[in-house]
Length: 267
Image 1: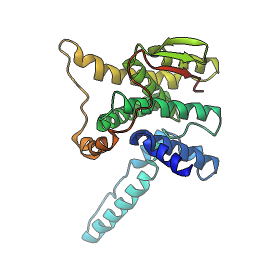
Image 2: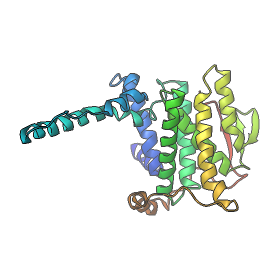
Image 3: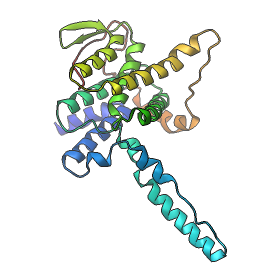
């Protein structure tokens, strides 16, 4: 049994496995009171303001210059102590419960289907998409005053997947049947019905459309060109992983019109 679970776990593609595991462990750490949500949430003041290090005004002697350098290094280390919030704000979806369960299911499902589908054999490009989305969501998060960015990240993944599979039919709660591109908007509608803010949903949809347009639409238009290019460093790091993933069976068949899913709300 344990061997079977271990085998199933390592059948999950590496990026999806790493991200999903990090989210589960982060939630478990909060549940066990190892950390608190206030130590994880996105807070530009604690990330940016503390990075403003001011050096000593006068360094008149060589000895004073040495002390200044030591002080600068200590201050720099202290100022970067909360830089983790740029990452942890994407890893926490709330305390254990239905909201966490639905979010982690959507994350696992659509992250994996993207990695094994349109990004199969292109792990570096997939990581670049995640980095692009994470950076843009973070920048918008400053304006939108959003504390946790993980749900917007999930909506972005759902949006990109849905636009790349426009003919796929979704069966929602066994009641509604519709084509995949409507899924992100339906999820936003559920957020509204449940009394939650739709800012996070709109943020995820906006960033997802931005990536989809720059990657799939604009390069194919007359006079268009590819604006998003994966850095060589990511290819060096991740291309070797693609060789180990060739034999992995995808979670679902990714042909348009063949995938039928039964989805539930994410909030």
